[in-house]
Image 1: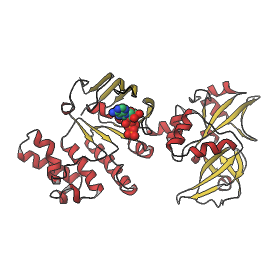
Image 2: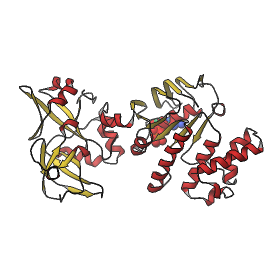
Image 3: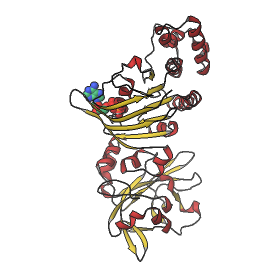
Image 4: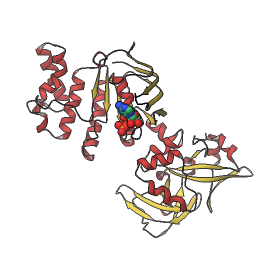
Length: 396
Ligand code: ATP
């Protein structure tokens, strides 16, 4: 087992594409680190450089006490798990798992013992004589994991290992990967574009955009304190509502103006975000998470911080109800929000938003809101997020 220290890592492909730019990460021994970001952000390239499958243009990678820049993949003592599983179709499951050990010419008895142990951990014992073609997707995925585990490497490198599974199996395997990694305590770098997977699996999550690391931290920290608009929009589902608001200082009482409506800010919030005072008289980008809004009827009060609107769309999810409602305030359109919308396939939403912004609130399932109804929405103003409109960075 080992820590992985990445310093100033960069990759420029031969055609001039810069895939990774000045990436530095300190991955602790035994840590589960998730690299996440939209398609093309460079996460796979970064992982392949750690694995030794891709040359390094700039910077260094250290695994344990050894700089591995010039060490070939097979000598790095890391095990890669691919999205495609990369199993040998003509070999049975036992031989697929044993393959790496046979290459290393381990004694027969030891191979037998190690394969059986891994098969037990992964509940593959009954399938050892079968060929990969006769297994389900989930079982094949476990064989791919088995091949990595049996080698007892210093690190696991996983590239979207769950993306070929259906949604239900993905959730099951996610829990299994988390458990195995915890039990074995092997340093793991895991690549995904799925923020839910990233948040549930990672001890820490590193969010990348266009080759550049945006923020790295424990999942809760990214959720509570996103450093910029991109991370704010990427983490959380549905994403954070972002809109333009102006801030006024009325003799020490700070107030947000969202179109015709206002929200008074609690004093505590301004103590925690002192830089916000500097924006009095100016515009800010306001972020409100769907879960920080509730049907005022459920809260039992229409006093305090509320917004009024008409429910545009009501989606009952069972555990909660997503209520979409328009607000006569300006949507935020920046390079980051455009990229996030593109990634979510919601380009149209952005052009439609020119008439005002549509917010999404995550209400309690006890709400009786129906489409077309006038609603009053209670906003937890202690939990609002603020960003500089010019730079997109969080105002703290
Ligand atoms: P995805 O989730 O779609 O796999 P990713 O975040 O893993 O995306 P990479 O595969 O690392 O991203 O690609 C990063 C950038 O490098 C992209 O712009 C991609 O087109 C480019 N790229 C990847 N491989 C090569 C290559 N062999 N030659 C040139 N450019 C490449």
